[in-house]
Image (tube, one colour):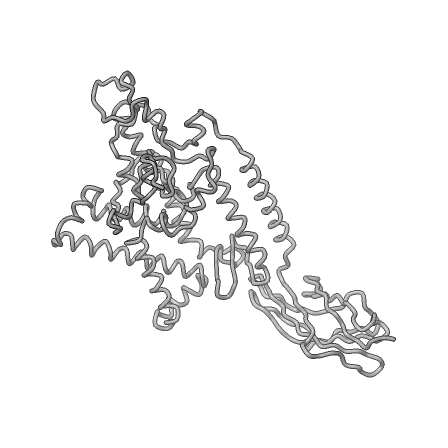
Length: 473
C-alpha cells in the first residue's frame, strides 16, 4: 500500500538517493546553548573514556572487559568467571537504566552519551570543519576537481583520522587486556607482540572506516537501539519535537517577509528556512515528526532558536517536549510504565548490592578426584582424596591458607599435601588434599562434610563435600 503524501518521507532515508547510492550528508556546523552543553558533557566523557583504563581502585582497573580471560572490572569491582551471574545482573541493570531514560526522554543517550555520536560530532566532524570549512565550503570542495588544495586537505584530514583511530584502538585494547599489559607491550616494542599488533591494526581500520565513511549510517542502519525507540516511545516521552500547532498555524508555513502580519494571514511561525534540516547530522526534517534517524542531538533546537531570535518570534518552536505536551499542553509526569521500570531497577540494584556484600574475596572449590572411591586404612580409618581450587579476587596474596573440618573431632584429621598454601594476588592455587575419618563417624555410604578455609587463623570461606565410605548394613 502506498504511503500517504504526508508520510512518504518514511519510505526512504536521507543517506540513500533515488538511484540507491550513498548520499553524503554535509551538516551545517551547529552552535548555541545546547551545543555548548553537549560539548561540556562530551569532553568530560572523552576524558573519562581515555582515563578509565588507567585508574586503579584497590589495585583493580576501574573498567576492564577482558572477554578472552572472562575477567571484568566494573567501577573497580572485579568480576571473575565465578562471578558471571553478578556481571549479567550488572548488564541487565544497565539495559533497564537506558530503557527507562528512553521511555522518559527518548534517544537522549544517543545524542549526549553514545561514544559513536561523541567521536563523530565532537572529534571527527570538528576536525572536518577546521580543515574543509562549514557546509557550503564542504559542498563546493566535493564538487570541485582534484586541485592541489583539495588533495592537501584530503591528505591532512584522513591522516589525522587514521592517527585518532589508532589512538582509539589502543584505548579499546586497554579495556580488553588491561592497561598494565598494554603499557608493557608498548615498552617492549610492537614487533615483539605481533599477535596483538595485528588485531590492533584491524580495529584501527574499523574505526577509521566508521568515522570517515560509514558515519551517521551507524545510527541509522547498524545500531539496534534506534529500532527499539519505536517500541519504547509513547505520547508521554520527552523528545526533540517540532511544535506543529504553532509552526503550521491555519495556512501552513511561509517564508519570512518583513512587516508582514503572519498571525492575521493565518500562517505559522515556521518560516521554512530549512536550517533545521541543514544542521541535522542524519539529514532528516524534524518537522515531519518523530523519526527513527533522530538521535536527539538538539542541533535543530539551537538553529531554530537562533532564526526565531533574528526574526523577532518566540523561541522554542523546536524544543524538548512530548506529543501530549504539544497537543494538549500536558506536563511531564511519571506514567505507570516509568514507575514499573523504576521499581524493577531499584530491586535489581538492591539485589546486586546485597550479592556484592556477600561475595567472598577468596572462592574455594573442593571436588572429589574423578574415578576415586575411598581407601580403607588401619584402625577403621576411611580416606578420600579431593582436589581443591582457590581463586583470589583481591590485589594482595592470601597467605597461610589451611583447611579444617567443621563439627568433626577426635580421630578426624585433614591431611593436605602441604600444611598451608599461599594464593597469589588475582590468581589461583590448585592442589590435592586427603580427608580421613573414623568409620564410626560416617552416616551411611555418603556423608556431607563442611570444610572451613582459614588464612592465619581467620575464617575466610566454607565449602561442602560428600565423603564416601563403605555401605552400612
